[in-house]
Length: 132
Image (cartoon, rainbow, N blue to C red; front, side, top):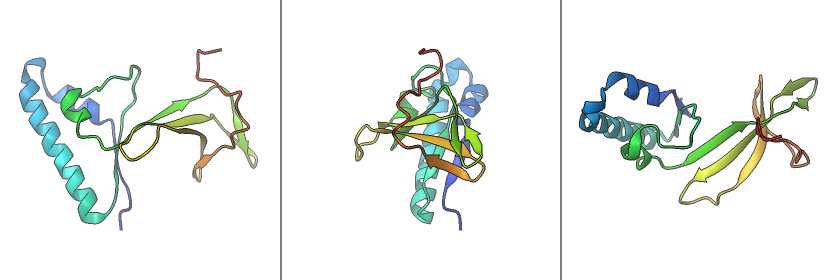
């Protein structure tokens, strides 16, 4: 059974398929897409995660999409390396940006071959790129 639905680069699909003068049509498709994701999530009890790379923290797909999002998380790559066993990973900061049922908190994590794992809080020296 599927336990998680991950969709990568959703914004790229909607930006490339519609011209600037097709905003209403794009909004309709975004809402239909969002409704389908919500329906599948409820029907199968599996959360849906839409991943987009961002540089500015702006709603890339506009207000129509921004209002469909239930939880917004930000994952930032930090400078440095952290060790797990004999392997290293670039550290990352995972932050709750928006969630009506969660506080705005963050944690450190790393990505290794076996998956994502938390990093203890004793790595307070880690910084985002360009902030040194």
